[in-house]
Amino acid sequence: MGSMFSPLTKNIGIDLGTCTTQVFVEGRGIVMSEPSILATDERNRKTIAVGHAAEQLLAKSPETVKIHRPLLNGVIADYNVTRTMLGYLLSKCVRSVQRLRIMVGVPAAASNVEKRAVMEAIFQAGAKEAYLIETAAAAAIGAGLPVYDPVGNMVIDIGGGTTNIAIISLGGIVLSRSIHLGSLDFDDAIKEYIRQQYAIVTEDSTLEEMKIHNGSAVLPLEDRGYYFTGRGIDDGLQQEVGVKSSEIYRVMGKPLVKILDLAQDVLRETPPELAADIMERGIVLTGGGSMLHGMDQLFSQELGVPVVLAAEPELAVARGTGKALHDREKLGALIEGAERIYRRRF
Image (cartoon, rainbow, N blue to C red; front, side, top):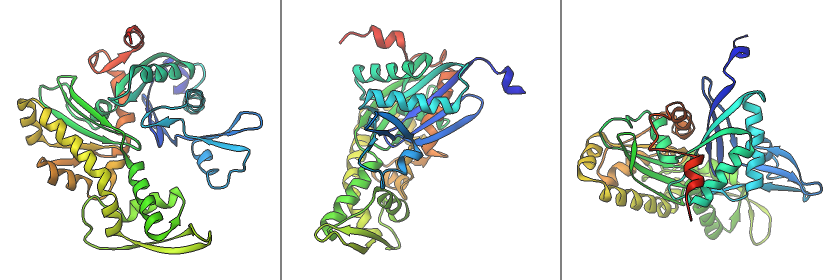
């Protein structure tokens, strides 16, 4: 009976990720986490599956079914598909009679055109009020960092297609950077290595499992083997191959070095008084990509700063958007509303 008397306006935070879209509903927490995938029937252009249901069609979809990934590097690549996907996800999370107030995280490098596309998609999906916040800022809030305090807070959010880094103090962003690299690039590096070294191609789900079980950001103490079945490039036949943990560690080094270089650049540009805070308080890692084994150890060794992995790092951005929406009056410097977005000139 309690839900019948809930407020008609519902605060919703969304982490619109390249790999996964997560929805946070105030008072309920994270209520949905679905792959950012949509499947359509090309014969009649109708949507037939979204999220997990669409993901299951990846390996066995007929020619008449097209799989869409509407997000690229954390921003909208296909507006119509994104709008449809958002509408579906929201319909599963809230009652149709509720007035929706929605906040979405966007990368620091998102252009004004890309931000407007996100804003339009939110409104088309049913929002009455819409707000944007930089992904790293949302991650800091979701990780519980004291963003209101007069101290320097540094967060590194490693998502599927984008890594966002920010220095936050006194409720505002002092410095923020982003790079189009994330956990998908780790998968791509492994995929290319297996293709060149073993002349084998395999499914994306296998690559993801390989990365989770045998991947490491630091040299593994135990060089375990991961055995899988793939299709030979030359003959098309199924073959079983074993890949060592040390091999996966080496091939993931290139994208990791680029992320580390960006973090070092941010630290160099940080004002001295805030840099001293970060040296003392450390850096917080968030995002699904930060869960790679040894990621905190690698960053700490290379940056010379204490580094900790946030609790449930993959949920930090979604939680942060929801919390920021609740405290939007206090966080005006971090939040962009419709008026601010649409008044800007190119």
